Image 1 (cartoon, rainbow, N blue to C red):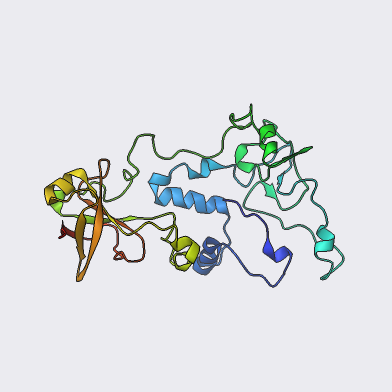
Image 2 (spheres, rainbow, N blue to C red; image 1 turned 90 degrees about the horizontal axis):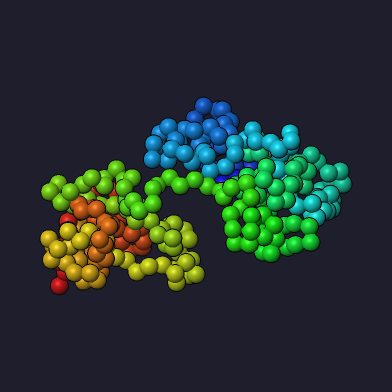
Length: 270
Protein backbone atom coordinates (compact mmCIF):
# COMPACT_ATOMS: atom_id res chain seq x y z
CA UNK A 1 0.00 0.00 0.00
CA UNK A 2 2.96 2.34 -0.45
CA UNK A 3 3.03 5.11 -3.02
CA UNK A 4 4.79 4.15 -6.26
CA UNK A 5 6.10 7.56 -7.33
CA UNK A 6 5.57 11.25 -6.67
CA UNK A 7 3.80 12.89 -9.65
CA UNK A 8 4.73 16.37 -8.39
CA UNK A 9 8.41 15.55 -8.99
CA UNK A 10 7.76 15.66 -12.74
CA UNK A 11 5.11 18.39 -12.67
CA UNK A 12 5.12 20.84 -9.76
CA UNK A 13 1.56 21.91 -10.57
CA UNK A 14 0.22 18.48 -9.52
CA UNK A 15 -1.49 18.64 -6.12
CA UNK A 16 -2.57 15.00 -5.97
CA UNK A 17 -2.53 13.65 -2.42
CA UNK A 18 -3.95 10.63 -0.63
CA UNK A 19 -7.57 11.14 0.44
CA UNK A 20 -6.71 10.46 4.09
CA UNK A 21 -4.04 13.19 3.97
CA UNK A 22 -6.53 15.76 2.64
CA UNK A 23 -9.03 14.78 5.35
CA UNK A 24 -6.39 15.17 8.04
CA UNK A 25 -5.48 18.63 6.82
CA UNK A 26 -9.12 19.66 6.63
CA UNK A 27 -9.77 18.37 10.15
CA UNK A 28 -7.04 20.10 12.12
CA UNK A 29 -4.45 21.37 9.67
CA UNK A 30 -1.93 18.71 10.66
CA UNK A 31 -0.11 16.51 8.17
CA UNK A 32 -0.03 12.98 9.56
CA UNK A 33 1.90 10.02 8.16
CA UNK A 34 0.66 6.61 7.10
CA UNK A 35 1.73 5.00 10.38
CA UNK A 36 -0.64 7.35 12.25
CA UNK A 37 -3.54 6.42 9.96
CA UNK A 38 -2.96 2.70 10.41
CA UNK A 39 -2.76 3.10 14.18
CA UNK A 40 -6.04 5.05 14.22
CA UNK A 41 -7.67 2.41 12.01
CA UNK A 42 -6.64 -0.39 14.38
CA UNK A 43 -7.92 1.58 17.39
CA UNK A 44 -11.29 2.40 15.80
CA UNK A 45 -11.86 -0.99 14.13
CA UNK A 46 -10.60 -3.85 16.33
CA UNK A 47 -11.31 -6.41 13.59
CA UNK A 48 -8.38 -4.90 11.69
CA UNK A 49 -5.94 -5.17 14.58
CA UNK A 50 -2.60 -6.13 13.08
CA UNK A 51 -2.77 -4.41 9.68
CA UNK A 52 0.21 -2.23 10.58
CA UNK A 53 2.33 -5.37 10.80
CA UNK A 54 1.81 -6.06 7.08
CA UNK A 55 4.94 -4.04 6.31
CA UNK A 56 7.72 -2.19 8.18
CA UNK A 57 6.92 1.31 9.41
CA UNK A 58 8.39 4.60 8.19
CA UNK A 59 11.44 4.29 10.45
CA UNK A 60 12.66 1.09 8.76
CA UNK A 61 16.29 1.19 7.59
CA UNK A 62 18.91 -1.36 6.54
CA UNK A 63 22.44 -0.34 7.45
CA UNK A 64 21.06 3.17 7.93
CA UNK A 65 19.59 3.32 4.42
CA UNK A 66 16.11 3.23 2.93
CA UNK A 67 15.18 0.64 0.29
CA UNK A 68 15.56 2.00 -3.25
CA UNK A 69 12.29 1.96 -5.21
CA UNK A 70 14.04 2.10 -8.59
CA UNK A 71 16.50 -0.57 -9.81
CA UNK A 72 20.11 0.43 -10.40
CA UNK A 73 19.75 0.08 -14.15
CA UNK A 74 17.32 3.01 -14.25
CA UNK A 75 18.84 6.19 -15.62
CA UNK A 76 17.92 9.38 -17.45
CA UNK A 77 16.26 11.20 -14.56
CA UNK A 78 17.92 14.47 -15.58
CA UNK A 79 16.88 14.00 -19.20
CA UNK A 80 13.29 13.28 -18.11
CA UNK A 81 13.04 16.86 -16.79
CA UNK A 82 15.44 18.55 -19.20
CA UNK A 83 12.58 20.42 -20.85
CA UNK A 84 11.83 21.98 -17.47
CA UNK A 85 15.29 22.55 -16.01
CA UNK A 86 18.66 20.91 -16.70
CA UNK A 87 19.59 20.66 -13.03
CA UNK A 88 18.14 17.56 -11.41
CA UNK A 89 16.20 18.39 -8.23
CA UNK A 90 16.53 16.34 -5.09
CA UNK A 91 14.37 13.23 -5.06
CA UNK A 92 11.11 13.48 -3.13
CA UNK A 93 11.61 12.49 0.50
CA UNK A 94 9.09 9.84 1.54
CA UNK A 95 8.05 10.26 5.15
CA UNK A 96 5.46 7.45 5.00
CA UNK A 97 7.70 4.44 4.43
CA UNK A 98 11.20 3.00 4.54
CA UNK A 99 11.41 3.31 0.74
CA UNK A 100 13.28 5.93 -1.31
CA UNK A 101 11.96 7.54 -4.51
CA UNK A 102 15.22 6.86 -6.35
CA UNK A 103 17.95 4.36 -7.25
CA UNK A 104 19.87 5.45 -4.17
CA UNK A 105 19.44 3.31 -1.09
CA UNK A 106 19.87 -0.29 0.00
CA UNK A 107 19.52 -2.89 -2.73
CA UNK A 108 20.54 -6.22 -1.20
CA UNK A 109 18.90 -8.37 -3.90
CA UNK A 110 17.64 -11.59 -2.36
CA UNK A 111 19.04 -10.79 1.08
CA UNK A 112 17.53 -11.94 4.35
CA UNK A 113 17.63 -8.45 5.86
CA UNK A 114 15.11 -6.97 3.43
CA UNK A 115 11.52 -7.95 4.33
CA UNK A 116 9.42 -9.19 1.41
CA UNK A 117 6.89 -6.40 2.07
CA UNK A 118 9.41 -3.81 0.88
CA UNK A 119 10.60 -5.49 -2.32
CA UNK A 120 9.59 -2.80 -4.86
CA UNK A 121 10.65 -4.49 -8.11
CA UNK A 122 11.63 -7.85 -9.60
CA UNK A 123 15.18 -7.45 -10.83
CA UNK A 124 18.51 -9.08 -10.13
CA UNK A 125 21.85 -8.80 -11.98
CA UNK A 126 21.50 -10.71 -15.23
CA UNK A 127 17.86 -11.65 -14.53
CA UNK A 128 14.65 -9.93 -15.55
CA UNK A 129 11.07 -10.39 -14.38
CA UNK A 130 9.59 -12.94 -13.95
CA UNK A 131 12.70 -15.18 -13.81
CA UNK A 132 14.34 -12.82 -11.32
CA UNK A 133 11.77 -13.72 -8.65
CA UNK A 134 13.76 -16.94 -8.17
CA UNK A 135 16.53 -14.79 -6.69
CA UNK A 136 14.14 -13.58 -3.98
CA UNK A 137 13.00 -17.06 -2.95
CA UNK A 138 14.55 -19.71 -0.72
CA UNK A 139 13.98 -22.08 -3.63
CA UNK A 140 12.05 -21.97 -6.89
CA UNK A 141 8.39 -21.67 -5.96
CA UNK A 142 9.31 -21.45 -2.27
CA UNK A 143 8.92 -18.81 0.40
CA UNK A 144 10.41 -15.37 -0.06
CA UNK A 145 13.69 -14.58 1.65
CA UNK A 146 13.04 -12.34 4.62
CA UNK A 147 9.61 -13.94 5.13
CA UNK A 148 6.42 -13.78 3.08
CA UNK A 149 4.65 -10.42 3.09
CA UNK A 150 1.32 -9.58 4.72
CA UNK A 151 -0.63 -10.64 7.79
CA UNK A 152 -3.64 -12.93 8.12
CA UNK A 153 -6.40 -11.12 10.00
CA UNK A 154 -9.03 -13.86 9.99
CA UNK A 155 -8.42 -17.43 11.03
CA UNK A 156 -8.59 -20.13 8.32
CA UNK A 157 -11.94 -21.85 8.18
CA UNK A 158 -13.84 -18.99 9.80
CA UNK A 159 -16.69 -17.51 7.81
CA UNK A 160 -15.72 -14.36 5.96
CA UNK A 161 -18.80 -12.81 7.56
CA UNK A 162 -17.71 -13.58 11.12
CA UNK A 163 -16.48 -10.02 11.65
CA UNK A 164 -19.73 -8.42 10.54
CA UNK A 165 -21.48 -6.32 13.20
CA UNK A 166 -24.79 -7.85 12.09
CA UNK A 167 -23.59 -11.45 11.82
CA UNK A 168 -25.41 -12.26 15.05
CA UNK A 169 -28.77 -11.41 13.50
CA UNK A 170 -31.32 -14.22 13.63
CA UNK A 171 -34.45 -15.00 11.70
CA UNK A 172 -36.44 -14.38 14.86
CA UNK A 173 -35.29 -10.77 14.82
CA UNK A 174 -36.25 -10.37 11.19
CA UNK A 175 -34.08 -10.42 8.09
CA UNK A 176 -31.46 -7.69 7.73
CA UNK A 177 -29.35 -6.67 4.75
CA UNK A 178 -25.67 -7.41 4.34
CA UNK A 179 -23.76 -5.65 1.53
CA UNK A 180 -21.68 -7.98 -0.64
CA UNK A 181 -18.99 -6.04 -2.50
CA UNK A 182 -17.94 -7.54 -5.81
CA UNK A 183 -14.57 -7.52 -7.55
CA UNK A 184 -16.20 -6.15 -10.70
CA UNK A 185 -19.08 -3.70 -10.59
CA UNK A 186 -19.25 -2.44 -7.01
CA UNK A 187 -17.26 0.73 -7.73
CA UNK A 188 -19.68 3.33 -9.08
CA UNK A 189 -17.61 4.85 -11.90
CA UNK A 190 -15.79 1.75 -13.17
CA UNK A 191 -19.10 -0.16 -13.26
CA UNK A 192 -20.07 2.03 -16.22
CA UNK A 193 -17.07 0.88 -18.28
CA UNK A 194 -17.74 -1.79 -20.90
CA UNK A 195 -14.81 -4.08 -19.92
CA UNK A 196 -15.95 -4.08 -16.28
CA UNK A 197 -19.61 -4.62 -17.16
CA UNK A 198 -18.63 -7.66 -19.25
CA UNK A 199 -17.09 -9.21 -16.13
CA UNK A 200 -19.79 -8.31 -13.61
CA UNK A 201 -21.88 -10.98 -11.93
CA UNK A 202 -25.57 -10.94 -12.68
CA UNK A 203 -27.65 -9.52 -9.78
CA UNK A 204 -28.61 -12.07 -7.10
CA UNK A 205 -29.68 -12.39 -3.47
CA UNK A 206 -27.79 -14.58 -1.01
CA UNK A 207 -29.53 -16.56 1.75
CA UNK A 208 -28.54 -19.05 4.42
CA UNK A 209 -29.79 -22.62 4.06
CA UNK A 210 -31.98 -22.24 7.16
CA UNK A 211 -33.66 -19.08 5.87
CA UNK A 212 -34.10 -20.50 2.38
CA UNK A 213 -35.80 -23.61 3.74
CA UNK A 214 -38.02 -21.56 6.05
CA UNK A 215 -39.07 -19.30 3.16
CA UNK A 216 -39.46 -22.19 0.70
CA UNK A 217 -36.86 -20.76 -1.69
CA UNK A 218 -34.58 -23.16 -3.56
CA UNK A 219 -31.11 -22.45 -4.90
CA UNK A 220 -31.26 -20.37 -8.12
CA UNK A 221 -35.05 -19.96 -7.76
CA UNK A 222 -36.62 -16.51 -7.94
CA UNK A 223 -36.93 -14.50 -4.74
CA UNK A 224 -38.74 -11.22 -4.21
CA UNK A 225 -36.69 -8.78 -2.17
CA UNK A 226 -38.51 -5.79 -0.71
CA UNK A 227 -36.76 -2.85 0.90
CA UNK A 228 -39.14 -0.11 1.92
CA UNK A 229 -41.18 0.77 -1.17
CA UNK A 230 -38.68 -0.86 -3.55
CA UNK A 231 -39.27 -4.44 -4.71
CA UNK A 232 -37.06 -6.47 -7.03
CA UNK A 233 -37.03 -10.12 -8.13
CA UNK A 234 -33.62 -11.80 -8.05
CA UNK A 235 -32.28 -15.36 -8.37
CA UNK A 236 -31.36 -16.80 -4.97
CA UNK A 237 -27.97 -18.17 -4.00
CA UNK A 238 -28.27 -20.51 -1.02
CA UNK A 239 -25.07 -20.98 0.98
CA UNK A 240 -24.30 -23.39 3.79
CA UNK A 241 -21.84 -20.99 5.46
CA UNK A 242 -24.02 -17.87 5.27
CA UNK A 243 -25.31 -16.69 8.69
CA UNK A 244 -29.04 -17.07 9.30
CA UNK A 245 -30.91 -13.80 9.50
CA UNK A 246 -28.81 -12.04 6.88
CA UNK A 247 -29.80 -11.24 3.32
CA UNK A 248 -26.75 -10.80 1.11
CA UNK A 249 -27.27 -8.10 -1.50
CA UNK A 250 -24.42 -7.50 -3.97
CA UNK A 251 -23.40 -3.90 -4.55
CA UNK A 252 -24.24 -3.94 -8.26
CA UNK A 253 -26.35 -1.93 -10.70
CA UNK A 254 -29.90 -3.29 -10.65
CA UNK A 255 -29.80 -4.23 -6.97
CA UNK A 256 -31.38 -1.87 -4.39
CA UNK A 257 -28.78 0.07 -2.43
CA UNK A 258 -29.34 -0.93 1.18
CA UNK A 259 -27.25 -0.14 4.23
CA UNK A 260 -25.94 -3.17 6.08
CA UNK A 261 -28.30 -3.87 8.99
CA UNK A 262 -31.41 -2.44 7.30
CA UNK A 263 -34.63 -4.45 7.49
CA UNK A 264 -35.39 -6.53 4.39
CA UNK A 265 -38.38 -8.69 3.44
CA UNK A 266 -37.83 -11.76 1.24
CA UNK A 267 -40.56 -13.95 -0.21
CA UNK A 268 -40.72 -16.76 -2.74
CA UNK A 269 -41.04 -15.56 -6.32
CA UNK A 270 -43.39 -16.88 -8.96
